[in-house]
Image 1: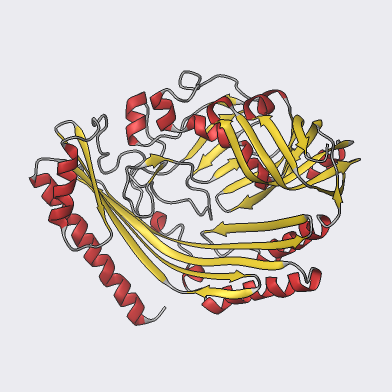
Image 2: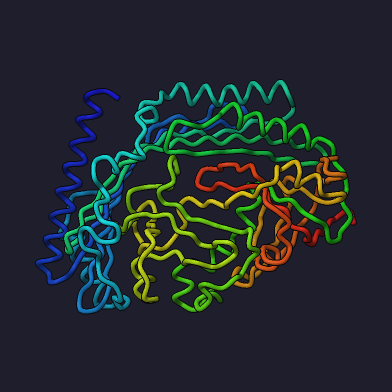
Length: 463
């Protein structure tokens, strides 16, 4: 990074911090307690479409959000430019006249694990190797995938998305909180697409990290291996089968669980689990963690978007529901402490909402090959296409199998086309969890093992 770029970034940061301070003081003068949020990022995305370099550019963005509590109600306004603090405050105060009731207070400095934002902690998710990663390196990773795919399957189209991102955030409020940190992220996505008469195949793999620890050759190799294995199509009659879900497919299985621990859903009574903390809802081997301080986690950070310190939150331990994911508002409504999961959109134009950070499904003690070896006739699902739930809060997950293999004697014998899987996640993870692999795979902000379900319903167009 050139000296001129560094000086420019430092100048923009000084201007943004001054703007935040002015907005906060103006809100105080208007009689409100207030919070100002500022985020900024610089992104260098590189993309390949159908084997051709399509996009290389640098983009910069920032967002400010002002939230006020005035006469018992909440007002919110946002902007992407630091030029008119008074207007930002006026809009927030006007919104507070008709805004929702304010059931929470802004945290004071040192609250919720205080001290976050110290120099050592604040740099934990900054990797100078990412910040200085040359554009040519990202382009080269994409070109290598295009070349390797061309050798393995000349008729397939190569797609890739590679990005280097630097950025950070700051939260200040009228209760004395002032916390900030900066962060780097690098992400890589590779996909192969093959279209033939009566056959469409899409295979992908990806990862992201706040450290330069990605393995692009390994990610490319997995795409090529899956593509080769999927070239042989086989049928699978409809019925109930044992099913192994690969890490990419596990995310869809966990969708209903995450919906039910969302603090907003719990607060509104939509989640059926509001009064079930401490209950055994799942198999004792099931343990799910949200870790906002996971080393190298792309969603890790010093604090969440409300300035609350991030933490490692056990959602489920030994099958027992332990915690919900809470922002300030949902925590106050439930009489609990926030968990550091408040997230705002890229433009910060809406209220913070509780969201997972880095999800970790704890592994089991059996090798993945051993899990597969227990299946005489069944299905391995690597990823879904269009997985959805008829009712998230009832646990129902249904999805088309984008990449799945029939298992015979524990071995992949070919790809299953036109296949759909239907499962109740709650029942499956309680009564039909046959095991979790010892190996785990990191897919950006999730780290999951392979999951064996002893029984799931499969429908097939070929049946």
